[in-house]
Length: 450
Image 1 (cartoon, rainbow, N blue to C red):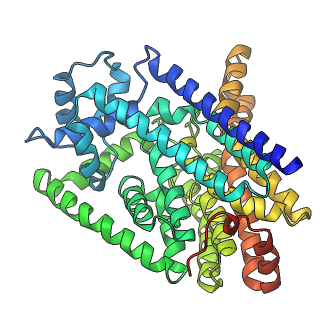
Image 2 (cartoon, rainbow, N blue to C red):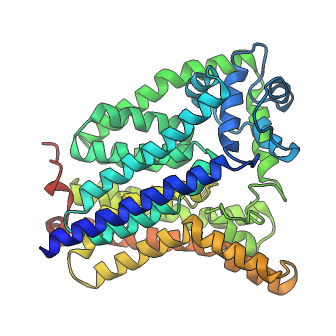
Image 3 (cartoon, rainbow, N blue to C red):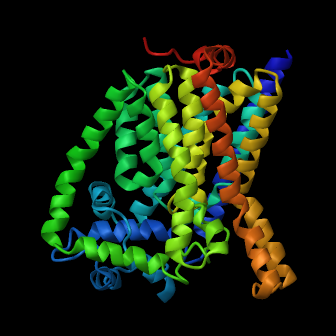
């Protein structure tokens, strides 16, 4: 009876989070705000550009001229037009943005937002089915909070809104050997749009041995099948696209740019570790190097452990729990990318079910990471900060910016290190792996491939 009630409570919490997500998404997107779905516009007009030859999808001049010929219901401001005209998506994404570019703008934006909302709900639903049977209230709380504080996905319309769920779907399909072709397609699309989100997930399965290595290689083959022709096409249209692409990236990451880690403050925070190291070193080369020196050893250890691990459901979930956090630290990511850490929920539940101190630590580290990567905590902080009219200059201003920027990357780093340590224990100790496997929730719902 208690278990049935806990399951219902967990399901209600998740449903409440879904309702909150839909309502907040509708509220944000329907506002007469020219900033809504700006990242979608970048993808949409770069795709349309390919249909209007000669048009260079990485030329600010060409995209701006194309945009001026397009009449939107709510035209963007001059500042936000820079987001539209400075394309930062790789040519591998064009086979998909081209499909949206063939549609009228209003149809395309509706389909794009539906793809984001539906894929996120499917990904969260899969994790619920895998992890909830043993700890439904814990899972419902984590996932409900995660999805309720994800309004920026719909508001900004960033491809990460469906790429991150695609990574989750592919992981679930591969681990349990169900709907593998769907998992292969999802991972291939993820690599095409945002390889810095998907690369460590792909590497996890590539290093895990058969049958997972076969799945990973098939995903890579599908990715190559549609990516290589797209790259060749872009080279034919714009032989100098690599230089233009680099210039666009530099435009956003330069000092004072929107993606400058030493100044990327706002509700949708940067999560990469450069936001911390840039507080101590002003030179980009120095704070980049410092971030790499912190992240590189952790990823090398993770690779070594994955090569040595005896492949099992529990070891794969533990590897993904660590990878989902570490992926977000070395290079540019924002809060909408952090939804990838829902991959840590099955590992968190498995540790929780051991009824020991490690389980409590797992819940603590995971909950903190979920909290600091959610939209609502930072929106509330921004509202309080603006209400107080505090100055962001001087010594106190720097301390305030540290409070502003540090929690998210440091919370993710702590979570990544914790699960990496647990992963190392599993690899070194077969007894620890057996204990964790007994508490593993996955096999109770989905069969492991033979």
